[in-house]
Image (cartoon, rainbow, N blue to C red; front, side, top):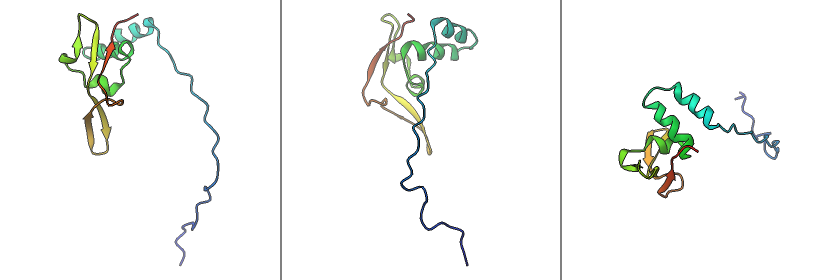
Length: 106
């Protein structure tokens, strides 16, 4: 009786070609403003914090009022959320360190 399984992988030792580096799309302030104009609260605020603060989505989703210094135009990145197979997990940011991020349009 045959199982149809291959006893040894034929892929071992095969080198795959390098994928071309993608060209990132850099949004201008005008593009960001056009995007934010189409969003409703509170998504419009998220649409400003991500590009101008340089935050990852998991960092921005964990921001709380205590992390925002409006007068100084800064946010404190203290936590980040990641979606894992067991559900969302809140932990320190990717760098495992708190960081202050300026959050002002240029």
